Image (cartoon, rainbow, N blue to C red; front, side):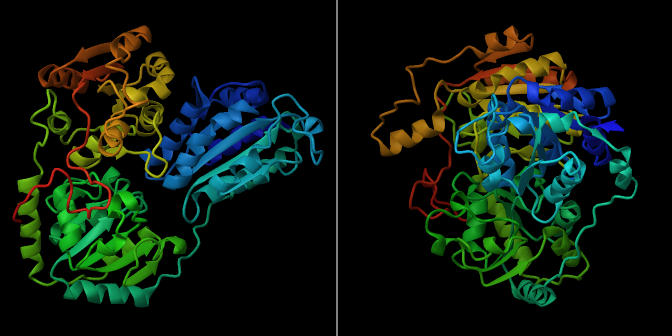
Length: 571
């Protein structure tokens, strides 16, 4: 016989779930003990379940979905505290396993109309059904292991995403026949065969062969495919230009044919490319409002649009395309790479036109500020060019400055909370990214976002993780404050308190992290270079109170090639 929680630990290992994150509670004590006793899945004890959820989701982000993490929460508040991290995985399509403890089966309220029977009892399955691919409460000891394997498989198949298994405490400590694990010796997840739309792909190739100004838009659905890097290399070798959504920019390398982020806070060259191409091939992007602007009929105004996406519901959703391929991006890339693409010789003129546009417009637009975000992220680009580094951005101005200006070398990534856009993402996610990548990480956050999960600095110090936390402190919630200045006549309630802000250097020191506060680029560059040479826990507070907006930025109602401040240029 084998204790059920011990069997669960073995299933995690058999599915290559190497890292888990938790905040201990009574209803997961058996699970935590068994996983730690087996010692093959490293459990990291966080200080908040939201931090555990973000860290667990970061495992798949940093491994191109080859692995996934697990986050555990106890019943009641432990389970509800996981919800933001679950939602983040759901909206950004990252596989992750969430396990919640539950009260004993004999304490469940069942069909009674009372609100609660057991202490901290909560029907978490019903709560998360709309933000998971599958959620289930185990009812018997016999179904526990089959259900666990089922949810792990579901998380990875098709369009990936989070799953949740709710396990009553008495079932965790139940005794099972060891034969329940016999299937692990032969179990292998079988990828379903994709019915590739060859006719639609042939039409795409035909359109590409006729195009003089083609452009590829890379979304988050593309960047974790196994052949993505090979496909990017092919585009570069053939002078085929591409741009990216926020999630697509996470793993887009800065080759000569990459013009950056599109949309509201995108590069001027990327938006120029979108609005002047004659063929736009969209790979794994849902084209949300921050990419297209509110007037979708003026998005890619000169182009035929062809969309590639695994999710049929995303095709012809906000932007009506001229053609579509419902398939996964990996199948598309493989077919593309084996098809002997032929493009018109005029494409090289388009490539040169975009390069000219990029060189003229990818410039510092913050000369009037004490610290220019463009120059700050330029320091990171220079310091870590061709180095092994991962970035994790929070949400707010700091994220958009990073997405606009970071230029990734091969093997580098920057991780974003895309669809949910949740503050507090950066610090705990950086912990998960480090464990997955086993390399140094730079967490980029603002003074607002840092406060939401600042307690996880203690984990960075405790585990001595090579993470540099950069707090860009503009003493306000800068992005919303900018909206208030534009649309509410400068009334800045809830975003600005007359310069009041925490002293993050002192907070870092309280957590026993080497910490610095700087107000100039020279000192900032020194700390960054020291971290590159000696990647130990470090906090860098960049004091920049006059940094209050993103430039360029799209104001409501304008097309994406009319960002403020308005500038005129000839490509």
